[in-house]
Every structure is written in C-alpha cells, then in structure tokens.
Length: 288
Image 1 (cartoon, rainbow, N blue to C red):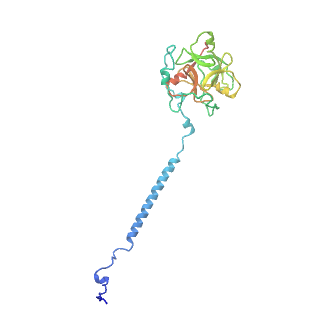
Image 2 (image 1 turned 90 degrees about the vertical axis):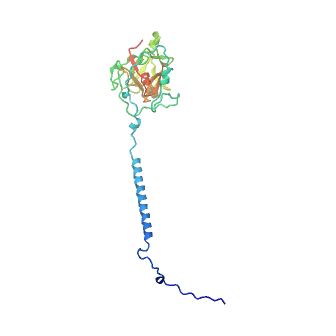
C-alpha cells in the first residue's frame, strides 16, 4: 500500500495576504457598458427621427401648378429681330434655312403622320386675339356677338415679301403672283371663325375654306361637321414684326401656320428667329 505524505491544510486568505477589493462597487463595469449602449441607442434613434422629418418635409413641398407646367415661350415675349430684307427671287427654302431650323425645349416642328394625331377641342382660356393689320372683318376687336363684315384680303409672307398665299392643286402654297388666274387664287374673304367668332376663317373665291388636315393647309368644301369648323378657324396673335400676325389653330393650341418649302403647314411653336419669320404674315389688299 503506497504511502502518502500528509499535506497541511491551505492557509486562509487572510493568512496569505490576499484581500478582496472593496474600493469599487460590485457590477460597476457592467453598469458603464449598459449606460454606454443605452446612450448610443438614444443618439441613433434621434438621428433617424431627424432624417425622417427632413425627408417628409421635402416630400410635402407643393408641386408646380398646371399653369407653371404649361408655361412656355409666350407670343408677347418675342425678341425683336431686325426685319430681314427681301429674299433673292427663286431662292429655295430647303437650303441653309431648313438646316438652321431647330426646335427649342419640348416644341417640335415635325408634323404628325396622316391621321396619327387625333383632333380635340381646345380647353382652357385662349389669350386675347389681335385683329389683322389693315382692320379685321368690319374693323372689329375680335370679340362680341355682332357678326363682322367680311373683308377681302391677300396674305403676304414677312420674310418673302414677294410671295403670297395661293391655292394650287387644293393646297395652299407661298408663290409669286402671276396672271389674273393666280391672283384670284391669292385673294380670300376673311370672315368670322366658323368655330369661334373672335377668330377668323378664310374663304376662297369659289366658296371653299382654308383648313388644316394632317397639319397641311388646304382648301376644302365645308361639310358642316364640328371637326371642319375647328380645322378652318385660326386666331390672330401678336407677331414680332410690325403690322404682321401669327395664326394659331383653334383645336391645336400652340401650333401656328408656317411656310416650309413654300407650303403652308401647322407647326408647333419654336423659339427661333427663323420660325418667327416663317410664321408671320401681313394681310394686304387683295391681288385680284
């Protein structure tokens, strides 16, 4: 049987010199950690709440009104470019003139494909009309219920002063006056607008009316439809050129009659000197 040497019992802590640390409250380290974590949580919550209030304030800002969204270059805010001199006879518009044409903003100069754009009645309030130079029908101001007296006029281009509106092959072109027949085709009776008495319609010598179809101006017989009356009504607006007007479509507000390649078309407004010159016309004494 092995021998074991008896060991003395361990000495109590008070006999080996060790004593518990009574200078610190038990659990102090845990309390500091818990306090730090709580403070960090409060700071994070406060930051998140502040960020949320900032986002909601931005989201609550009122959107622009419809009038502000629809506001575009106004007719009365035109610049006043120098009136160009007479064009060289026979000058072709398809050269540098067409190359310099460019839409500004959202306005485009391209006409829609035939039948691609539905015609709709105008909505909203139209700006005040302006009587054509030389006196509107009856010299009226463009309003009122009393019918105005018809007025015989020819329509001359501003930037091609030797060219006038002329009905040729059913379409309205910009051409130089020739013999008596071509002069008769360049004379129109300006009457109260078929769709709006404050605006104007143009009647040919054979009883047809100038109307836009597929955004091209032509002479057609009145079929009595609401669409025809709308297509054949144009409102005179102030022009950048003295004694001239621009003609806006009743059922396509923002589109004006303009000559391109010497053919009259309905084109959206463009903020350019070329567009303003091409869309400005003077009503003169009839050629016929």
